[in-house]
Amino acid sequence: MQATNVRSKAALLWAALATAAQAAPSPEAQRLATDRAAVQQLVGAVSLDVMTEASVDACEDIGAPSAPVAQAAWVTWRERHQLAPMRSVLDSSKRRQGGDALSWGRLIEPMRQRVLGEANPEPICAGLARDLQTPAMDATALYPQAGPVARALVAVEMAQKPDLPTVVPGQPRGAVVLPSQVSALAKASQRAGEVVVVKGWVKRWGSAGDKFELVHRAEGGRRRPGAILLDFDAEPWVGREIVLRGKTSSLGGSTMSLNEAALVADASALTPSPLPQAPPEREEVLLQRVTTAPAKGLADKDLAAIVIHGWSNFNNGTTWEEDVRFLLRDGSVYRRTEMPPDQLNVAVSRQLEPQQWGRWRAAGNGYEMQPQDDDGRPGAWQVEKHYAVKPWPADTKLEGSFSRGSFHGSLVLGGMSFRNGMRFTRDGRFERSSSSLGTSGSMAATLNGTMISGSSQADGSGSSSTGGGVVGGPLGTAGAVSSRKVDDGASRRGRYRLSGYVLTLDFDDGHQERLLSFPVHGDADTVYVGSGSLSRDK
Image (tube, rainbow, N blue to C red; front, side):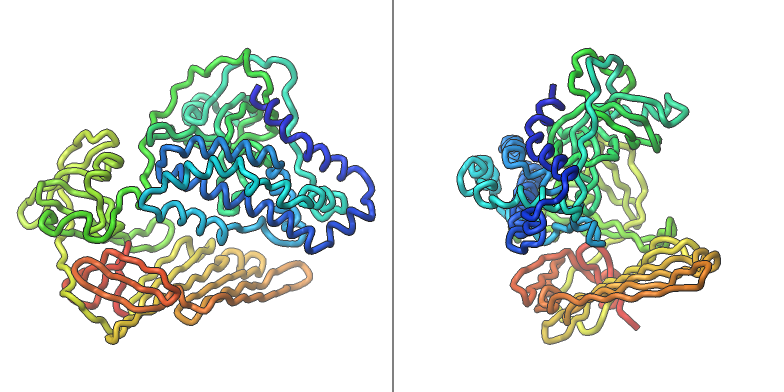
């Protein structure tokens, strides 16, 4: 009865939106839709929902014990205040104005980091579940015009009415396919368009957060792979398990699309599918869960060496790949090296991510390593091409600019090129820079005279982006250019310190980063910074 319950809880505002879409707009609706202060209440209500969801997701990602309670409290809270349809209307309104779905990155990241940056995030997560029951989080009282504005935007056709899928009548019979059975379903089915019944937890996907999929819920740090992409607005069911009937599409691998989906309100007559499920896999653990305070992690006396191996990757473009590993004196090797070794919490990492550990031994002038699986079971010994690097002498100073480039795509079909760089000065200052350029390929230019490009760049002076192009057609070509500049660059410049295997960056905007760093070839011409090496600009 899950679908019926959720639909009934969301019915009030959804029904009001449907009525608003069918009736002629009233003068009050026209006034509300253009009242800046009233519209801001809708934005405020949805923003509160977005920030709360970001905190809840961070609690789950960090592994807080109270995360399931906080997640359930958030689902109940947003249903009580009808926030799901408000978010759908607000996104639709943005699209009607000629843009994409709203980007909530500037709200989401600070809320996530508030949780992830805490040494003990459990009090925040436990408090979140309690706070959602207090007047301070009463979204209806805080933003009384949010609901009326949502209805007004639909009435005056400044937003599209979000439609709920239909409900399957009666008690449908048959087998229920889970996301983890999609791969087996693809092998058993030779054609798309077959009617199936599926069940899973609704989760967002995509950068804008306005697309949805069914997945398995993680249990004990593991999740069964597989996803079912949905073709409707599943906003009301985010964080809930639902049953759907629809037609298969894009069936292949461990992912499929479900078209013409309808809710199954009564699933009591359905039976589990006999198809085999993909086995659960250990999810990658957030870096914050396996790091600790500086100098509290892997001790220098326990570190035998840091080793690296690099190679060119020509798959879908051109990139330089590198693999760095920590070799411990006890014969173990750690493969996930996104932090300085003195911040690796060895005991916690061994418990949460045994697949990142293994064994190593010297072999001639190189090394052999033995990986482990998700359960810590050893595999076969393998010859590796890694070589040891040296740390920076204390208080090393650099002079010059260093960069790294990559290209993804092809010159024929189009692609994106990226460049990341850092400039160091001997007085202890640094500046980080990045740029990207995306263009349509030579095929589009040859076939129809179309050439579209977009670029962005950022450095210590600020950041900017530009887009434009020329589109060919039967009556000639048309072109357009747009540009935008934001921020002052304080988040990309500041002072640096190099010592041992650590690059410490103190930014002018007040935040600090500690990154793994070392001279790749024993000199100052190739510098490893964070997750990749930068070469001195000639």
